[in-house]
Image 1 (tube, rainbow, N blue to C red):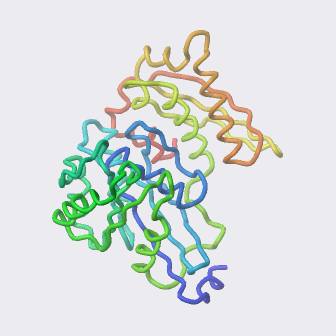
Image 2: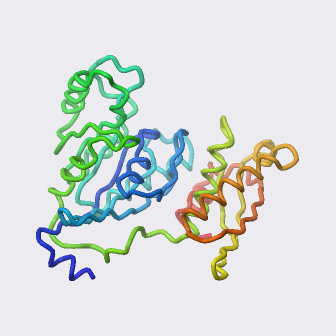
Image 3: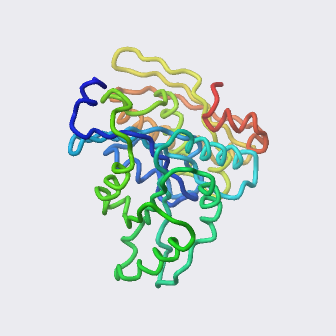
Length: 312
């Protein structure tokens, strides 16, 4: 199949790292580009914890882009944060293009400045010897699009970009021009068979869907100390049996996740099961447990394991 793709006229393929600070819409952008939900996305910063590859494929023009969604880059405050920055740096390795995603600030009135929170990402890109495209996300916040110009100019003063594309990941605005800017900087050829979507196993995404349900149903510091381990994943015909453990840092957090009479855990399980059935295309029997592992976000070994970057 790869040989057939390589024979297609002007086939271009390569790897593109998606980088940015937390909560600017990187995962939402990847899902929109792929036309399906591959990675979890919530309004809470720090949702993405592991670099995930998602392969975009198009026939007109022939294009294959291996997008690498990376954790949000911010100043490390714990072992877990340092692990996330490591993952973002690893996501750049072997890439042909870097896509820096930032956002139009809320209530933006045209003040021409680069967000201080983008400084860590810009510093990471200093040593990257590859073209960087800036995707200015959430332009749907602006009624007067003329206000974009001073913001774009501010970022162009901060560093040289191969291209700047204003987009809205949620609405799908300007994604075709963004893909074309990436494509023109890729080498000719193909990387994968056309049925390849990702490099992660199904049990990784199952754990992520449970964590997404936990994050959507809890608040304050609880979501940031939550991890999910899949203890059992068995396919039985059209049914998948999944047992998973939700790990929290404190006894009080365990009580919050379980809820009164187990009500919140039941809600989490129902949401996660429906999401798994959509993702796997099979019926799912899901059982969840909650356990406390104090201080895991401060321990690099446990942080790597619980962030889904090392096998249990």
